[in-house]
Image (cartoon, rainbow, N blue to C red; front, side, top):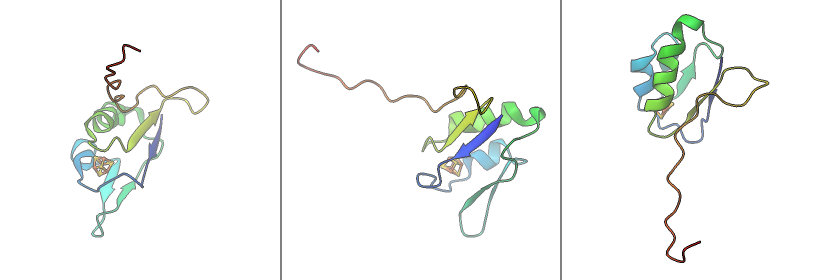
Length: 85
Ligand code: SF4
C-alpha cells in the first residue's frame, strides 16, 4: 500500500490524524505529514478509514503502485441533466 496525499486540497483539519495517528501527523503550521507513505499492513484499516473520512478527498491509496487505486475518494454524483442525455 502506498498513500498519495494531494497537498493542494488538504485543509489540515486532522481527521486523518485522529483515525490513523501512527501514519499521519499535523504540524504546528497545520501542514499534514505522511509519516509512513508505505504503511505497515497493521495500519491499513486505519489508513483506509482515514481516506474515506477525508472531507477534501485529499488521500488516495494505491495497494500496488503498478495497479489501479484500490481505495479512492468517493466519486461525486453524476451531474443531473435535464436534456435526457
Ligand atoms: S483528513 Fe484530509 S483534509 Fe484533513 S488533514 Fe487529513 S488529508 Fe488533510
